[in-house]
Length: 456
Image 1 (cartoon, helix red, strand yellow):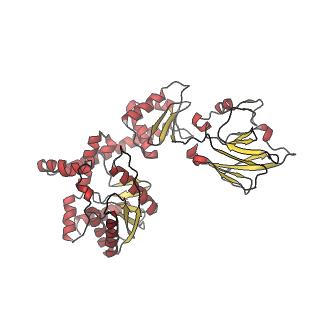
Image 2 (image 1 turned 90 degrees about the vertical axis):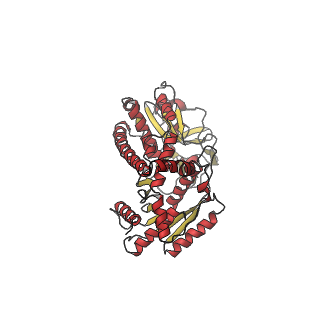
């Protein structure tokens, strides 16, 4: 058995220790790396050394005029090897500041997530030379330990396990295997375009380094492995700190955070953002977060990082999605309301249902029914009316009550308020006004409310 095949078998066996029936999906671009990977896997399966089903998975990015041809080529190659084939076309939206490679990679893995089951195993054709190029790109960006760790032999991306069985194999070895077995492959015209940083490093920098130090690729790969080990230690430290700082509502306790050194605090913030939100903060953004931690108590500062907003409220740090403004949203109807009427609230906030079947997973509110012809509305704006929640003995302005309930300012803007005409009936998720609670003599109904946890 050849070295490449041995590497593939070893990687699969390591990944499949606990589940030997997981289907194997092969990321298949049609280039020499993925063609060799596909061929070797098919060969091993024919020998009975791979028991799992094989599926070649091709993503059509539409970046090249030859993309349709490549898609057909990949399908034909999989068919020749008796390997199942699936494909998906994706559309890329690339901003001027974004890397085409990075946007295409994210779109590719999101497509893989859609195409393969959660328990599937993805194999990619990344090799030792790719690792060296990735290291130099990370150095160019000024990356920390996580960036310099480059590509792991096994990782989880977009909730799918990905293994890279050829990370110890050089490009030269892959090309030799392809020639030896007469493996056809496509040549991506963009791979010679040196306006892309990776291609510039591949064609201009690496040959110079290899001419001076022939084993530079293996040396760089060893450095990446050292960084991976260091990153594991950093993550273990972050997990310990997170256990101490995490509160019951998933925020981070500022008193605990303030006990950490600046280095450990940076490490913890990076860990939370990367592990839980797939966001990599810059040094400047980490500094901004730490500045908001010491802001005046009457301030509620926020830092936005790639769609995740970091906020401080009442001695805790919160991580929320970037919410849309729902202030102008309005639903209204004249009573009586048809039983079972459902309302989808905006921006993923949740759903309402008037009476109908009991829903154990939804909050249930017993309300006095509106009078016939009375206008019933659901809205998120209010004019700060004076109201009397059922748990209070005295009325108070709505803003004061929401503060009294210690509701974070950004969540106050996402509370569905029920009105009869212009009179506040309920603030869903928090209280019903006393005048609208059921009585033995009143006509009553049940309002069900379910909400998306991340939206609040």
